[in-house]
Length: 236
Length: 225
Image 1 (spheres, one colour):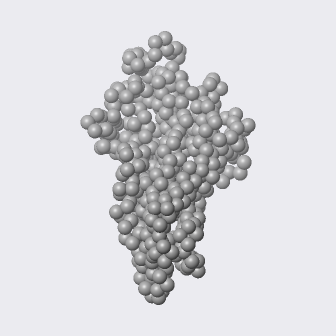
Image 2: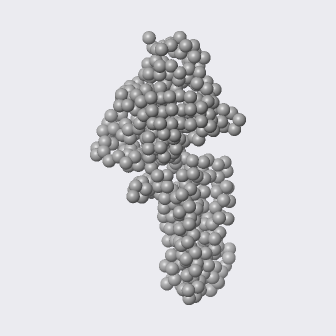
Image 3: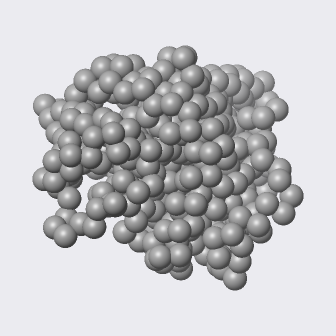
């Protein structure tokens, strides 16, 4: 999966959420998308998914200019905790529905996916009764089943317990190893720095930092310094 | 046909949710029955007049109930941003439209199955033999209403004051379908020659074909917007 973003801008009225974004994201990369609140991280993720139409600029997926159809064929996934699950369907029914819509017919795959994220006992329970962390685990199970080429992850750390974080990071690493592309938007700079192979920092809709991991730690720390929480434990 | 398989899965999901939420169908049944009771007490219609007035009064109830159903049509997709999940899925977006229109049609048809005989009972209409034909016309009108309503329900999803906007947009556009249905039902109930009712039947079929085709073609654009 190769993604190229050319001079991408998005305005809400007179406010610019994204301005002239130029990025090339390659297969196997895990890209940390960092930035303070209002930097445009979620807008960029949703624009990449084709859920928001950009004001100007273009996105190319595997060299083809993205239309709604090409984006869908590329199997783009969004992992946003608590989102994209029907609350009055059970965990198994949610997975069954999306697996069917994605054309999957893996026999027994739903049970395996639920077991992997520790939700076997909750398979027949309505998602509405789940905690935020359990919904996030179910989303991980969902995307494990659907196997997207590009996975966009929006701030997953706030709701997951330690084991859940391990599950997520193990899964994201697996996607990248399999030739997929992961874009992880988060405020957890330390975790992102430890997990991702590249960091992109947005401020007021512009890219202010874009470097592979450890290439320029001083620049990275100075770029994130303004919005990283005090006492953040930096990776060695 | 992939689109039909996808629409069938989405319809399964909507039926399952309705079975568990019981929001739309119960409200529509209750509202439809309530309207007929109000008409019955307020109008004090004689038996022979009741047959004449049946198409108009019944369709007033059908349109109100249908609008109530349309308000709730995309409610499951509004919660947890589930519409986004459907929009990024590698499916034909027309499948979402087809499933939602079929779901609304099914709910309205169920309401009609209860409300029409209720009118016959409450107003003392004796023409029970004509009820199936009346129901056929109503069903064709309901197809047009559901299809157009689904399109506008999607169009107003993120609009402010959609509860007001939705009926204001649908009702003027649905007038040709409502008129054709009422005139067709009227011809049937007057026991007129079928030749008198046939043009309205043809018109309804034509409207339905046009609305379904247009809906499938433009739904992608509507949800993108």
